[in-house]
Structures are given as C-alpha cells and as structure tokens.
Length: 202
Image (cartoon, rainbow, N blue to C red):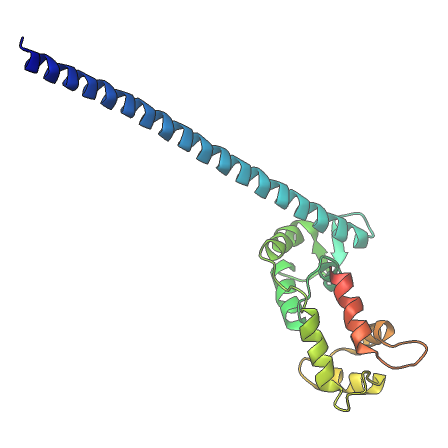
C-alpha cells in the first residue's frame, strides 16, 4: 500500500471513529436532555399537586367553619360568605350562577361539600372573581364624591348602592356601612375604607 493510500485509509478511519464518537455523544446528549425534560415535568406535576392540595385545604377549612352539623353540608345562605372568605368577590349574579352549579337538582337549602369542592377548586385555580384593585375602588368613590369633600354621608352611599347598577340588599348595605362608617364622625372616609378593604383582601 502506498503512502497516499495509507494516508487516505488513516483519514477515513479517523473520520469513522470521530463520526462514531459524535453519534455516541449526540445520543448521550439526547438522553441527558430527555432526562432533564422528564425531571422538569415531574417537578411541575409535583408542584401542581402541591398547589391543588393547598387549595383543597383552604376550601375544606373555610367550609368546615360553617358546617355546624359536622355532616359535610352548609346552609346555602352561607355559601357567599364562604366564597368571599377564600378571597373571591363574585357579584350577586355570578354567585347565583355558582349556586346553580352546586345545588341539588331539587334544592334542599343545603350545599354538599362533595359538590362545592370541585367547583371552588376550579374557581381558585382559574383565579376568577378577583378583588377590584385599590386605585379602581378609590376612583369609584371619588366619582360619587362630587363635592370633593374626601368623605361620603351614609345616606349618599346607601342611595347610590341601593338604586344604581346591581342593587345591594338591606342586609348587605348594613354590613357594608358597619365597616365603612367612621364611628366618631359618622361619615365614610372612603380612602381609609378602601385601604382597609384591600389590606383584608391581601
């Protein structure tokens, strides 16, 4: 075999070895990459399961407060309070829609935990009915405060909330005023009230 042929043979052998090594390295890289992806998916699954477990605990704890008979049911009239205690702020219309989902086909006046849990889990996972941001609430009060006094009279707020938009019930209005009215000045210092509401929501 001539020198030229020997050189070509050596180069060919070297290329084959290099190609083989590259294939092996490439295969290892693919295996490592696949393993990393698998680990990432496992971590994400574990994280999601932990989140759902925490949400289930929150819902269970909130429900149990109103389960006075300890039989995994609550009075349908308490459901709105339970939902709001979980950081959700549905309108009355949205609350009625939720109740329609979880009530029995023939309403009994009670809601069963086994129907409440999956519905509320979905609501919390989707982050529905989030509280209105502080700046939006403040602007709404400033619009009502046409004289720019920095406060509203209870009668003014009652008129607006009872006659405009989706009216508050008398019970809801009394509950709101009990928290909103300054006991010393007997007016609604709405900046303080908005700040208090947003701190509670957080």
